Image (cartoon, rainbow, N blue to C red; front, top):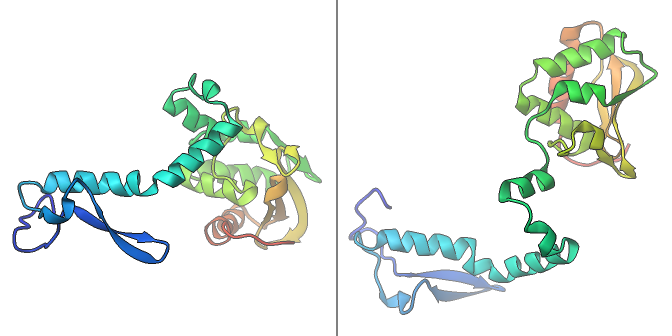
Length: 213
């Protein structure tokens, strides 16, 4: 719209349709909006008001309810000391995944660090890009982000829970995970290539959804 001539093409006014619990009503984007046609001369203002309506005005009640609930959990005085970026990191965690930190905060069960399966696992993780590492982390923990404090601060269903690799006592099958415990049940494989292939299948095809084991 902004990059093209709209005269005679769109029959728009400075108003939008709003869904009000199943019924439709017309909302003016500015006073008298239903009587103001959108033209080439005022289309930039129309787009700005439309975006503002969709992102804030039309969901004002929901935004206010969210803010009220957020303030009840975290007092506003505590939030004010953080910048927007700092608050985002606290809530969402770190976007980049440090493999050495991950490895240093991993517990092994019925494995030794020198076991080929464990060695191949970390070799595969290092070979992954950040997107694949994030998928692997989500597969194992339910979250694609690392806590701000690093892997040592991972949380599970019962509080602080380190990532763990558990011997699955199976061979050449897909790995499985228990996100409540930040745990991967790791089968043995005949080669590094087979392990890497199986993990790529698991994280790309089976990293979403919920189930009981």
